[in-house]
Amino acid sequence: MVSRKGSAEALLRFVYSGEIFVNGHDCIDFRPATYWTVFAVEKNGQMEMIDDCEGALTISPNLGPDLGNADWLAQMEADFRAGLNDQDSSARLASIQRLGGLKLPSSRDALHRVIEKGGDDAESKWAVYAALRTGDVTVLSLVKHLLAKGDAELPERGIAMQLQYVTDPSALPDLIAILKSAPSELTRIGVLIALGEKLKDPRAVPSLEDHLSDSDPYVRYAALDGLKNIPMKTLVRCLPSGRNKMSNRKYRFAKFGGSKSASYEVGRKIKSFSLSPNLLPQRAGSSLVTELPRLAVVAGEFIAELRRAVVASWQPWTAKWP
Image 1: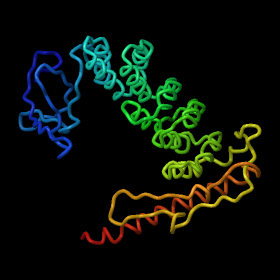
Image 2 (image 1 turned 120 degrees about the vertical axis):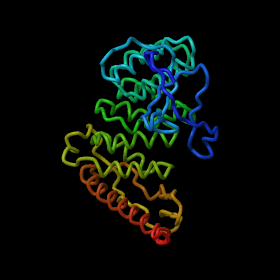
Image 3 (image 1 turned 90 degrees about the horizontal axis):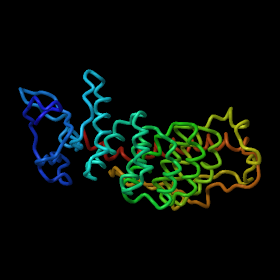
Image 4 (image 1 turned 135 degrees about the vertical axis):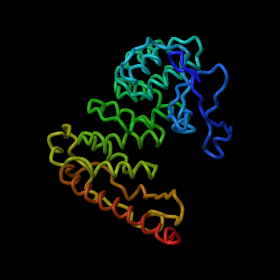
């Protein structure tokens, strides 16, 4: 292994099994004439990767200027930015992904040039993903366009998962627009988490409410969980004009048992539940200001009950262990 400066060599201990999907280890495929950034520590005179699957990342051979004693993140960013000009498309793509991994706002201008250049559609999409990871919410209009077609493939799936980490309050209108047009439950869940857990903006209440009767149970759960986080004291002044009316029907949530409830399978890590959509609220008539605080309480109680049931269902399984 040759260092960045090209003047020093070090032995690197590693194994490649070629069976990542079998054992989940030893999955870094070092090949001749490839370039990598390696994260390693010295052990007994040898360099050993910090992780046998995430301890090395493919990079472009194009490197930026040597920044001397600058912060190592700045040096990596300079190298990855240089890789955007590589003649090899796979190396350019790796450089885009690495910039996204650094999550540095200073990378946004370079990523926007890739997006604006268009060219290879895959590179442009990955640049949108990388920009979003830096916290750049100006790409959300592009995200809406991409995710309106679904998120079954990469990088769309990664973009959908990244939405839950949006914390910029100015993103609220774009997030709501994405929520309205998204066909995938993964995208809707990501947006609802951002609205209810990160932004906690009362203006998101109508959108959270709309998804209490979503066709997907996990989306309904995310909407419920988000509503209990909305600060009630700011609700009245933040409600848009004309949106202070809601259905007279009382909010009713499913209890345990039958098709109206949660179902649990003891001893399995994945537990699913379903709520009957016809038991969830519809909008039209009474005061949202008076209904919503009660809804938040009901949502909180329902989620607490759900968690208690999950814990209880695991007791017979965990009792087998000392």
